[in-house]
Length: 465
Image (cartoon, one colour):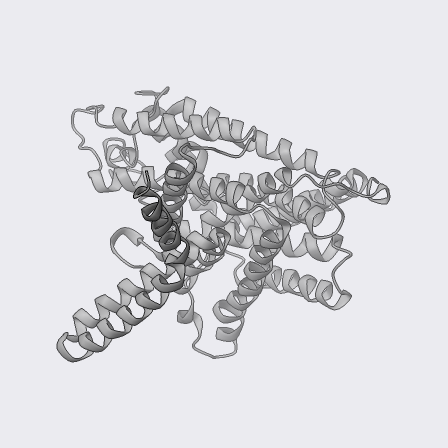
């Protein structure tokens, strides 16, 4: 016993003093290794080493500040060009990395997988389970004269669902205070304003800036308009100048979509709907008045909308009728991911035997994961809407309440966008994995509603109205 006591003390002092000598040692080691490599390594080896250092640095930073990883992931894909085949981009890589680090942290530190206590988790978990089962079902030979989609395409389709759910859960579980949600929101709005200027406004002035940033999809525009409008309209804590700037950003975005890009219906229709929804959720009287205005606009714009897209509308209806015949083969579990694209040439569309996608998120979900998958997806949308509706009066006035109204409006906009294309859950052979750089934003910001619900606000009496 007498001999073991000194050894215990030695181990204690070493453990206490580890941080003081380990970090300088690591820094010195990296500097020495870098110096040696600069003389003996080839340029390619040096590039790989520096990339490895950057990767390790990012991992350490994301482990220390997980919400910072979400900020980087939300923007990286719109800045960095595609990294590999099939539209692999920085957003998909970073979300997968953050998801892996989060799961590893829970297993290593907490010894259990613990998710945020929210009614949204159950439908998401069910959706994931059904998606995995549908992936297995997709290996069955459904049509004799058609081949399956390549395994890479099937895994790509499944990964879009896994990473979308992962983005939602990361925000719901790792953004635990209002400060980080504010940072995530304001950084996104600042970058979105820059994106609109660089991709749309400056090229109109003759400047070649469009290639500086990557294109963004409908979900990006929906959340840009919904958050900017709700913060400008309902966040009274903001300085009037900033509220005016946000209102200007909304007007500029609408000008770009309605005047410069009117042909892109998937861009401006959901954004107008989400503004109307934000107003309607805030005041049902204003919503009713706005409904009359929307009806009038729809009546005025309908001829121009349908005339420019008459062929597209007709072919979509024909495609959906063919999709119904394909889905009947396996209506409960679906046909697996990306497979139906290879089955469509068996059915003539417009006299041609070609592969095509449905251009509709809901048809895609049924075709790939069956009625059960669609039921879970709609259940999730219901629970998110229910959560946001309940948070309207629970969170304090200012940023938090404006965020809730913006998220509710954006949710409605996403529902509409899903009818116009595969913007919410990109289909591998249409919007593709490339589209995840934009669709991920919707899942990320909807996860913010769960974060707000977990913060346990105690509101003053004057905020009860």
